[in-house]
Length: 384
Image 1: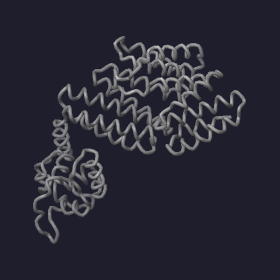
Image 2: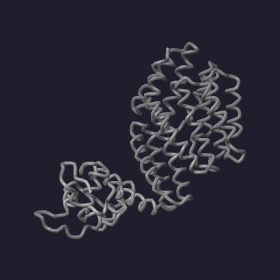
Image 3: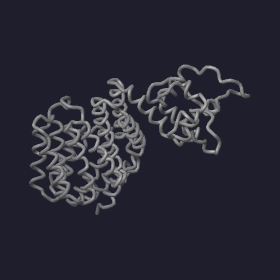
Image 4: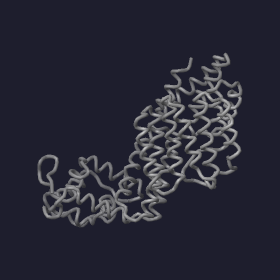
């Protein structure tokens, strides 16, 4: 067993786990425990003062600790995956011949407790993060997303049963695609690429081709931002071909629209508009036929997407399509509104209406700053 960060031998397994395994200060761990309790519905609390006593293995004035409150004990057991009696015991040299052994054992025990209810809870948490992301932007939600990606990846690494691994891998693919999109919006293209690579790897392990197709298609947007539009077209074409006829119509429609955007970015006007026509024909009246992998697409979002492509290729129709989409857009989609207004500003500039262009550009600029969208701010800087 190692020593604590001040050179002193760890007094309890808990102290070793916090300082040596997790590499956290006591304050950092207390803050983490508070977030963990809130996210997992645990009533237990853990103040810094209480934690200092626990890691020391003694109460005030050196008195014995006594029994922990059941809620606090449960919170610690859920975090570390071992009984609280073991956490509060003195570390022994023979117990951990490998510094990572305790962490491995804890990870295996935690992953073994994952069941269908836990998977559903993790998806519910992801839905909450998506809501934060769409309304407040990555500036608020990206940290939560990356933390969730690390959490699910750890569960996957320690899961043994194939069915459980497949479920966790599908979930990890979803979390990583969201993290990739957020990183792209923040202007971090290499980070976005890495998250999409992680998403594709996880999707492959899920054994579900739909997640593979979706992750690959999302990665194409990094290529578009890099100016590698021909490669983006090729990747999306491949993703559409890989999607089976049994693929839910909502995902087929999303893939067609994504393909249309890539074609527009590559200057292929006719093919782009044809792809959007295909998307409209495929779009179901309701997205209830598939909620995984998640895509945000309905008639309004498709109109917004088509309007973006029309503005790219210089079609006058873009103004009418985008204005109609803006009137119908759910105002909680802040990033979508930002992008839409930039498209409108671009279209109005192209058709000699600078006042209208300025109006939408100023709205977009304020929104982009609020949600921390470096990507949209960069688009605004290119407007002439």
